[in-house]
Image (cartoon, rainbow, N blue to C red; front, side):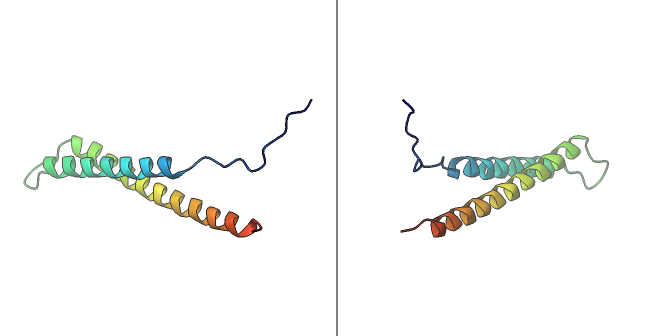
Length: 87
């Protein structure tokens, strides 16, 4: 006997991973920005940790942007899927 497939099985929600990506990106960017400003030295040589904080800030901003783009694409795909299904 062949098991019946369930074609109306709902897909996994992408909300939690998208929110985690955006929130963690914000935390990384915020923490790196705070560290960068704290170690900034206007009157002399900059500290080597400034480079690490700048890279962390850039990575956090990229993560936030990627999460926002991911959310927009997921929302558009959701809308397109809703329009295709017959009522």
